[in-house]
Length: 179
Image (cartoon, rainbow, N blue to C red; front, side, top):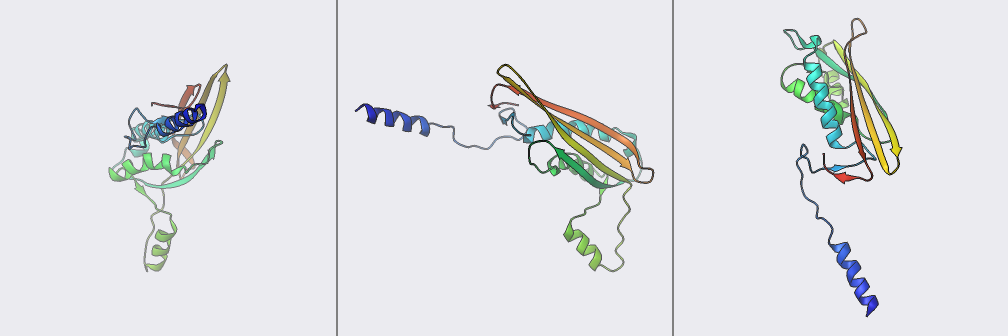
């Protein structure tokens, strides 16, 4: 009888988990992981960098400049696609007509090669960067900071015309829900 009650209790506990549901990616009830960069970390850093970039003098011109994406080095212990950060910045700029983005994927390159007389614009700027991490522990509290660094380089002069660093820091004793 005791074993049956124990087994029934264990099954009840296992079966009472929270069911999966859709969440607003900009909401406050997302999972916050101290172990990795979350989607909200990209959104936070990308939004701040986008606002700074739009206000820079590099975009203070009549015609939208031609931008090419450079390397974004992921220097963290996590494996993730750095295009998550870049898309938070480049999509709004392209859609607002603030930049022209050279697409360098293989399909676009093959189409250009196959099209006689195709003219590829020369990039005026290259956007490059690095993502770093810093971890700290004090007692039972853990802290993870992710540092997003981006630089916009003028191709003609090789000079940086805009640079921004944005840090996202999370602390706690365990992963949680919240933003």
